[in-house]
Length: 121
Image (cartoon, rainbow, N blue to C red; front, side):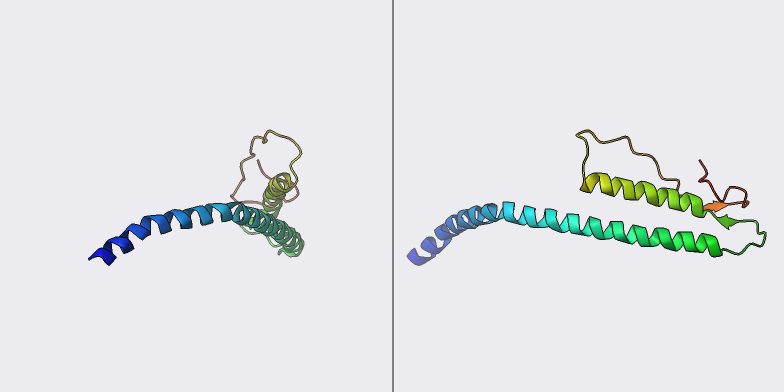
């Protein structure tokens, strides 16, 4: 019975030692996760560039026949530009205060082809 008391009294000390060790590792883990986040956001920016070029190509090769609904490529590209600008502002901050966010349109279906060149409000 004497040995059982010694073993159970060692657990709180072990927990304290582990807590101190893990708290010492926290800054290194935070720095690694920050670098990883920046790499992922830079990769996302490159993917947005690819999506933008695909959207431009699709807009240029879209069928010219008249249909009731058409995909609004100009609005999609405007939203992609806003997202890309937000990522760039985060990756390379230029000022201390964040800008007011511009809402994304999100609705890429339109009824006519008259405003292909400009994004709809």
